[in-house]
Length: 207
Image (cartoon, rainbow, N blue to C red; front, top):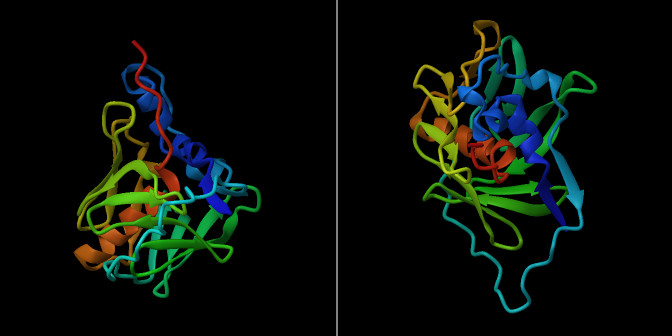
């Protein structure tokens, strides 16, 4: 079985891990660029679903796709296509590489296997286990609360993206989303970012 793994590596890109560990209160914390980081990795060997647990039932269609692109500075780091296919920045090749395909019911499919599902209530589950991941999507933000505080992204109507729980990026590295013209499309983009980049458990802040 395939599953999403190593998402914490991408969390480092936006400075999330530093914030979750108390980095936002430390001087000299530097947010890292997404283009400097390795891509999300998908691995074989996920634990199988519990024998007696039935498969997760499908959701009604609730995601709305369009040709959307997420930028960090001038670099396109995530593309979401109108057919649900995605592309993510590969730091090794410095190009966009194919990512999961997302269905309108919120199911993420990678290498012909369903690996996660974003639900209408804002929760995201890993498949096939059905485990609820520590990330929540709303109309204008996606956050991970496993560290005891919110760490994530806020998306404005004009496409500007600000960080929650971590230092602001320099203007040249600022993030923004292009192509999302409706609230449903913006929430779709946040759900995809949440499943791909924010689903890992974060360490509690250091005292």
